[in-house]
Amino acid sequence: MRDSSGVVQPDVKAQKSIHFVLGNEYSFEIWERPFKLVTEAYYKHLTDVNPYTLENVRIRYRAKNNATAYAYGLDMRLNGEFIPGTESWFSFGFLKTEENIDNQGNIARPTDQRLKFGALFQDYMKALPDLKMYLNLVYNTGVPGGSPSYANPYQFQNRLPDYKRADVGISYLLVDPNKTYNTAWKQRFKELSVGFEIFNIFNAQNSITNTWVRDVYSKRQFAIPNYLTPRVFNVRLSTRF
Image (cartoon, rainbow, N blue to C red; front, side, top):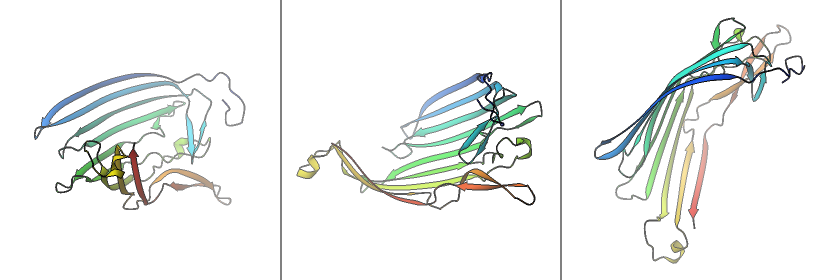
């Protein structure tokens, strides 16, 4: 690997880690319908860590094994038939990961996304069961905003704003594989559905990384956020023959 001055460092070691994972799956019934709760707790100890900086989509490693790190967290997911005949789920995640570079003390690693919440809820109309909808919700606390290439990350400990997103979709099943049709054109398909979706329905302005820009007068560097896709409308047609 090349270091910050462009010199190849052939003696860089691979990072090493020890993982401890404790998991549990619990299946049960509510309202005479099946549910499952999956839980995992973990701890990870890393040595010979090769620190890196992240700017936009560019990752630059230090080409040094000069850090140690750790990560621990908890993941939970509950899924089941909240509405009969549909699959929905709720998830929660907690993560903390820090690294110690050259014994300067622990700071957040670029992947330190502390809290994550997610939900997928599906439903349909009883009078018209072929008409279905889904609602997808995601909320994540912000990750570290990164630092300029090869700069001292201890001086750049800002975080990106929280990530918020909601998607909604409506679909209609024109041809159900579990039904028999007399119509000629429907007999040509095993399954056929048409749908309409809105991604990021509230048009939340989420940033994923920063681009660092240096001011020529003060020599200070400023973080310019890189934003993800805004609201998107999508028409979907899916089929199986």
